[in-house]
Length: 497
Image (cartoon, rainbow, N blue to C red; front, side, top):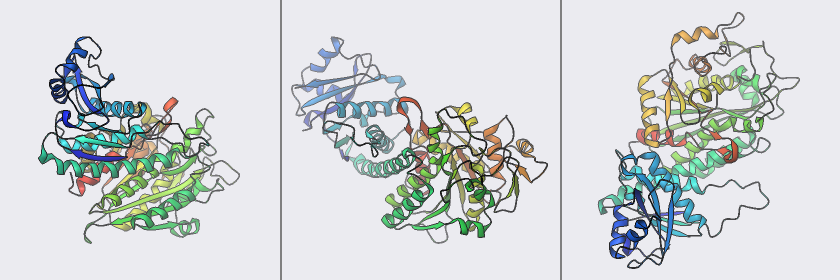
């Protein structure tokens, strides 16, 4: 998909289609009014007849509109103007792109990007339009013998801005949006691959390829390396699988030498049966998505490299399958983590924290500015927050606020849950330093409490994306979240927002 930026009047655009908005009830946007004036009331007549009320989600494609140079005009319903905010803007962009693609348009000029969105500037509108457009057009058909039949797919979009002094920031926003969308696409593709394809070895090979393409420093630790480092917790999860575990480290170091790096840690369970504490069969196929935290790290490393962000960034991905078998870890086993702390494993399906804790200890060697882990960690988070917000817990309030703010800007929101010491007592064990589960109540928080015991030497935040990393049902598939949230956080840290 090719994107460009333009400033100019809609009636003068030589385009296959010009896209303008209509508010409810029957109120033309500014660009639509200009077209209507040049068309001598053509749009007003159509609206007056009731063909377009302006309801959100509605559209109307017009041919041969007089007085303009474009072949067609697409009217997009925007809902009530007083209620037009971030969600409505993104949905209008998505509807435009979907309609254009379905009608066979190969290029179009969008004036929706000129619309006022409260508290959001032109850079936000352009970045979001780019992300929404590419998200709408995304298809995963790599494994189909017959690809999805898309007639004359949309190839070029021109985003319009109202003033010429907005052209440069809009161009920068398009570049950022494209890079972020490429990161989202990589995250989705990895998440959507089945477990027999996207193995720990596949993730390691993907990291090596990323390193070659973007000049990242990449290191892949094998089982023997993890044994030497004392990663007994991670290796306890890998024991039941025939697939060898991999511990992947990627480094993007374009910041100042003295700048401490931001470290991202992604849970990379490429398939989660639950181990000996096996999961119910229903929807177990979706456990291929249990590596979406790892996929997020890959997407963000690609984004940072593509944007050449002037920061130091380290991505760490501990990866294995969680399988039952004769060698698999049993409930009641006690293992020793890299930190030296011992863990009684009461439930082998609480395995994500067991691989993350060794990765968090490994992160200490980078003397990080902060560490952020991303994991599809707990079903309790889905119960608490649904599929709208990711769960956020942190040992540093300033870091938590920065991430919450980034999520609000990106419209990839998170919600902070408490990380009080009161919850730590739930992890007590009679036989080890801690248990790997804390009982029925507050499961999202006790999982974070477990991880916090390995993150005491730096600022740390934990994102539980169990409810936001993928969708179920007819639209089953990875969402690419929280790449936009963390991408905006990295842009802010790089001074580019």
